[in-house]
Length: 376
Image (cartoon, rainbow, N blue to C red; front, side, top):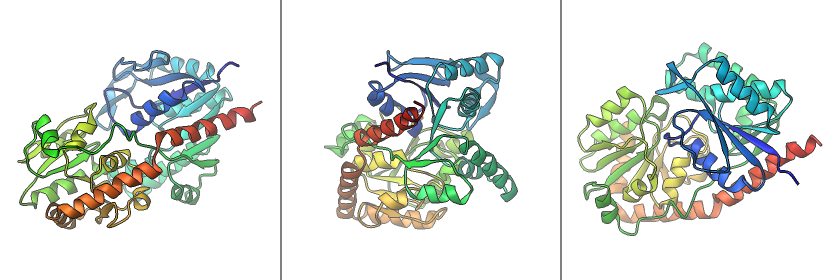
């Protein structure tokens, strides 16, 4: 029996390192036996990790950019590539509603293709926090994205509470929960913290860490302000982002910015605690990976984190934008190695029990195949 052709459309690609790309990698590894997979992505690079997966690259604009990255060129050639890729597919699996995702959705509607969207973030919240939008602008953007989501045959969301939020803003498309997972064999605890630090040329001092974009919606400035209140420690920011924000970190004593790295797990092994100060998240894959590495986590109480982080058991919360409270929480953990160990061990248990990629992808494959069977 011939496998159905699945087109994954995304606005991210290597050398970026983010949660969406991690999900795509894990999905493609496990879904290749169920689908003939093609990939439609911006040409940030021409790297191809899977020899049996055809990658269609879209040329980048020389002028237009979004969130510190170039976006695809709005050209007839790119539109023709998107249209052709959609026409040749049985099912369109859209990862983000950026330009690639939006045009893929447009052509999927035109050619009556089944279209499934995975919700990696709530775009109106992301844009509101990134650009500090006023209420009217935020409402107009939300209305636009709600209209796009309602064109999908199925929305996959990472946690149940998100469905209530979506229904409240007028999203009527079918919704199913399909949580993300963690590679527990890759993200493991360090056997020797000092060796892990030395391997990365880090000082043998308490390492406070963050993984992700350095950008307004991630609220990384609150982390920087909190760090400056501390008497000890070294801050490592594993990621890249907005130039002016990155420069604030690089200009800070006892702080290092790595840029995006392919071996995030090595940096997590060197950390003593992990901070997620974000203003908007759905799952926060980087937080799950830190927990899998047995790190105590201090986080804002948002998205799915408010469910899988249990205060005092596997992590600690702090109020949004409150650098003073964050500094106190960090100090508390730095001064109490027993508490750090307890939170970290329980964090790892949480991941092992609840966040297997195998179970996650198995469910997603089942849900993707369901709309296909309805077409027969």
